[in-house]
Length: 225
Image (tube, rainbow, N blue to C red; front, side):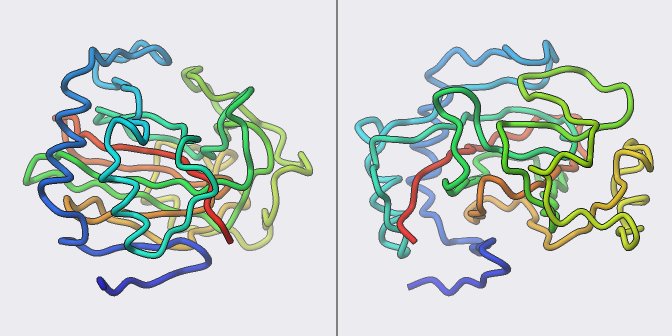
């Protein structure tokens, strides 16, 4: 059994956790599609459909071998992402019929350039609403809703008196008003063969330094507690 560590229900698995054969199969499943950008109309922000259990049962069997237990392996949501964009502060809670606050999100890196450095920053804040980006400045409207009212009761653990000044340097394109009250819980560095799982209502953002798009699989599954 591969060892892992947990931080407030955020579970980071190290490199060499996912077999190369499974990574290849997941990447091939994406490349066999015709990915498109249906949200932001950006050149390097493509989306693809996630594999269902009948498509790549090895993925779900593998996750179960690590101790994850699924309520229903036939219910999953999410998308592939091919992007070099920096993603703003958001929550992956889904929308409409796929909206759920009790699912686990999995991010699995599948491809990146050797010199690419990409990080996922998890915040202490959570959002108990549909998929939303938190912003108080001009921002390109994508698939997510946008929230500028930080007094919304669905936004929890905001601390305007003690917010994290590290965000000033990590995400300088976010104005102080957008970062207000936010604080960093933990950091995941993209590495092929590793992955991270986290509650889908946990707020987070992504930073990358490459002009060449990376490819990953972001999938939400209902896990037993």
